[in-house]
Image 1 (cartoon, rainbow, N blue to C red):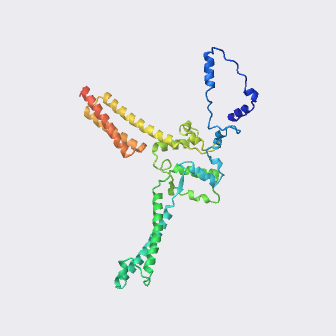
Image 2 (cartoon, rainbow, N blue to C red):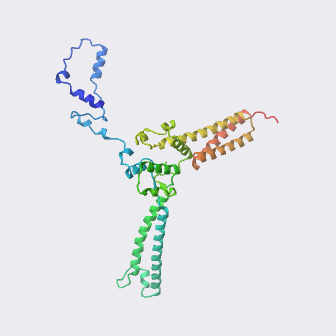
Image 3 (tube, rainbow, N blue to C red):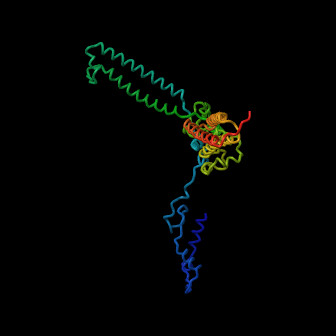
Length: 357
């Protein structure tokens, strides 16, 4: 490395060569000598990121050369590499929900709880019919001479309810996760086939795509808009396209080596492309309205109708392509309405062109 070479050269200097006889300065030094002496007296800047060999400057040796990015190839082929692959990108981080069996467990727990609750209610009815036992229905006081069946039932119901509520809460959280897209599941499945991650049919859990959920609801979920979908689909079907360089940042390049067939797309750049598409659509609509008002030669009523229809078509198109939210639609309507009112007022001030029948 360059830093090591420079440090090695500095150690080859002898005391005689490092301490040289300075020539006597002239009585009137030149401007060039003055600037040279000024810069020579400035403290030299040392790079903190580059460690120095030897024991001359131990405070700069902080081990920064050991910092690196983990890659898939650092993990052994099989389940370790498959797990690292799923963790490398949000689109690949998909897991089985096992929704049918989780619901089955909940149904079983409900049946068990309801049987215990029914038994407890029958005991309450027996206590209500017996005057000597009616007291314990309105008090928590317990007599050791009484039958402990009711107390044991309450303890059992409490234990089962705690387990039931914990499982139900976790199941509800899993239900809130979004499903996965077919191409993301296909990428995970292809990686398994190409790398032989599982043996003996242990990859059978990958077959049911409708039971998979995304562990993060940003890029890997169904909420990503259609512009991102079209870009990802195009890049996946055209691996040699030059557009890959636009949607792969340096962070994604460091995750895999050149020999790897895995391509990580930048979530930020995909979202930026979607925003640019929305801005282009809105700008095109506004310029269309302006050209329509100034070059159309229509009456005020016809111009308003055509502008309203064009605005409606634009909002529908943007909601389908870009997946804008209702809040964004409302703000777009307000902005376009302001533009329409401004343009119509300017047209009325200037005067509409004469329309010949």
